[in-house]
Amino acid sequence: MSKLYFRYGAMNSGKSTHLMQVAHNYEERGMRVLLMKPSTDKKGGNKLVSRLGVVREVDVLVGENENICNIVKNNVKEYGKLHCILVDEVQFMKKNQIDELFEVAVTLDIPIICYGLRTDFKMEGFEGSKRLLLIAHSIEEMKTICKCGNKAVVNARKINDRFVFEGEQVAIDNIGDVHYESLCGECYFKYKNQK
Image 1 (cartoon, rainbow, N blue to C red):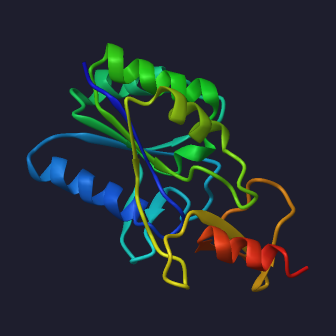
Image 2 (cartoon, helix red, strand yellow):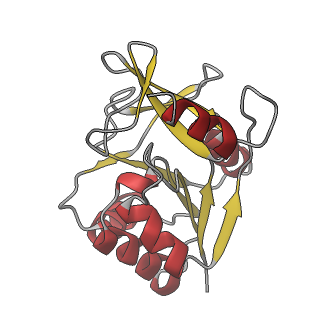
C-alpha cells in the first residue's frame, strides 16, 4: 500500500523547489509523475514557481469542486501507470479532496506527496492542511529561518511593505501588493504588537 505524505513549512522553506526535484528524480528513472496544484493558487497560472527561479508546468489545475479520484483514474486510463502524484500549495484544497488523495494512495497504490503551508498569516489552519495533519501517513516539516536567524514558523502578510494581521485567509503572494515573510514567533508578535 502506498502512502499519503505531507511536507509543510513556512514560506521560503523550499517546498516547490523540493517538489520539482522529486519529479525530476522519478522522471530521470523513466517513471511517470502527475503534478497538481489547486486553481486557487493564481501565482504562476498553470506553473509551479519556486523562489529560486525554477518553473515547471503542472499537469492538472484542480478546481475546488473537482473529484481527485476521478482525475487520477482518467489520467491513468489515458496515459498509463502513475508512479507518484505531487501536489503543491495543498493547503488550498478542500477537506473532501484530501480524503480523495488518501483514497487514491491506498486503493490505487500510488504514493502522493503534498507540499504546503500549515497555517495562514493569522496562525489559523488551512482546511487542506488541517485534514492532512489528521490523516497523512507521514508528516515532515521543511525548515527555514527568520531574518533574526531563529527558526521561522509563521507566515506574516505584508501589504505595501507593512505587516497586516487582519483580512481574508487567502491572498496570493506577489499578486497586487501582497507579499509574505516567514518569521519566528518572537518577531511575529513583535510586529503584531507594534500597532
